[in-house]
Amino acid sequence: MRNLILAALLVLASGCTSLQPVEQGEPNMLAVCRAQEIAWNSGDIDGFMSEGYWISPEMTFFSGGSDTRGYDATLARYRERYTQGGREMGVLAFTELESVPLGELAGLVRGRWRLTFKDGKTVEGLFTLAMRKLPEGWRIVHDHTSVAS
Image (tube, rainbow, N blue to C red; front, side, top):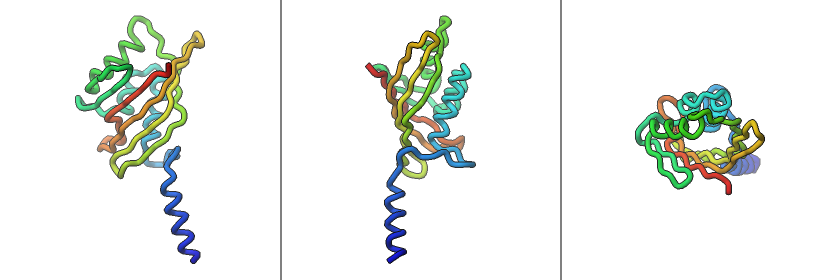
């Protein structure tokens, strides 16, 4: 009976996938988001991209009604919006991160993002990242980001 109760608890616990902790020694999907946050807040757009996104022409980024395809095009989009013409990148914060494993080599990350600028203004929204575990680690293969209205 005791073994049956323990088995039932293990099954229930394995179904609880909200807010997965970062595991020591093996980067997971949420660790990728934290590395991107650090790179962004260091003013490193290239690091932000290379820490998380799949370096492939097949990577996709959907936001604001636009469909950007490919790592290089997505990097150019970020540079145009956040670094060109003396634009400020702001301070990035990811909150309410939730990882959803879809197998050993695939998963989703959902959460909120917020950019806070020197003048106190903020821009924020939601995102869903489709991720794959590749030889270089977990990488974003599709990013769907929205801005709160």
